[in-house]
Length: 483
Length: 108
Image (cartoon, rainbow over all chains, first blue to last red):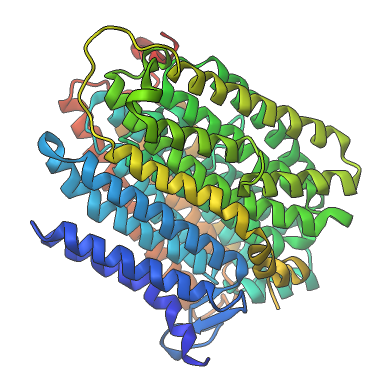
């Protein structure tokens, strides 16, 4: 039991070392990557088997406030597992996607994706404000590099636009960290929580506004979402899956961590603001997704809408609905990660088979790409919040929280959002069942669709694991994560 | 004590100036310079507000600023490399410039 905390640094170091090895390796990269994938996912499962008991690791044996710690509770554990599944799927898909003429891009994709994996794990396990800043920054740089992987003019422009926005966001976050450190004299999250609760000063509200604002910008919260659709929609499919499932989710995770911990005494006035912006994101993102003609743009705008649910839930995180809202948020984050990853992978397979990005080119895909269309439909069921998926459980818990708190407006907005989600996804899936045009089809295997389907089925299966997941989260929901 | 506060105020001014320049300018190199000014301002605030000021400097704040500088250099380097690739690919390095709004191609 004492040594099980050694899992935490290994979960960061293993992907990091693999990324560096993959930079050097040539032909063996594929096998190295596959072996690392199995090993890292097994370690994530091992962490999961600890049942959400908080684990803490003091790096180098130095406890806080001198040392920098890593910690994992039920929330972090679930997110580490989701990360492992999405990264594995994206890496396997990448092996098929980047072949032939795109082999050079594939050689660059592998180490970048592994670095991203290491960065996300480090962020999820961070127990220190500055580690959170460094890992956020790391993810930003990796995301920009991955988005620019295709090196086309459009991809480079989207990547740079994202980078500029994210750099402003990081600076705002760091300024918040500086104010928080100046007021409390520590960077360890637990110590900050204690000191903020003992002495909530006005400067802390400014710090919170800067940090949450910066993170909202990075998480593409409405109306700061403009950078996301071109960056996510224009990237290679495995990259889009990683960016949409993990990178925006990481910013949300940091807000949630700060919200439950250090900033808990200050959240009163900010919750409604995030609620309104989240609600507008649900409606606007859903509406935009409905009127896109480019398949990948439909999926990208869907990310804006689904992130809206996660931010709206911050306003539900109070009163009688607190526990439901927290559980709902985490389930929604996990479900969206799996489903959105699957959806971008499926969209990539369909785009290759159809020879174009437009939704109306997808006619006949249900018979030519059955696996990809099934993946799209299954992931869509989870996104729209229909049973028996994890997405259903997450949205149901959020609705329950709104009901318990009597926040009827949010109840209506979330229901409308589900209808919008179902509409834009049905619109896409329906086209695939139309008879195929006589025009020659581009030859394409089923492997890409198969990988997408595996991830989509995991989103479906997660729906049957809701009870164990809620048990993992039980200590977090009652104590706010910090014992 | 007052010199520390002076650092913090100067830092806040630099952040405001950098932010304004970053939002107003279109050329990527100008934006990156503005980003670095903003970063410098944040480091000054960090240094000025760090507890335990007086004779000896706060080592934690210094370690943070060093890390922050490394991060800023990495970000600047990456952005410059991307901007160079964009220029080579025939793109306009003035993002969102009024003369280069051809990127709303998702409406076709």
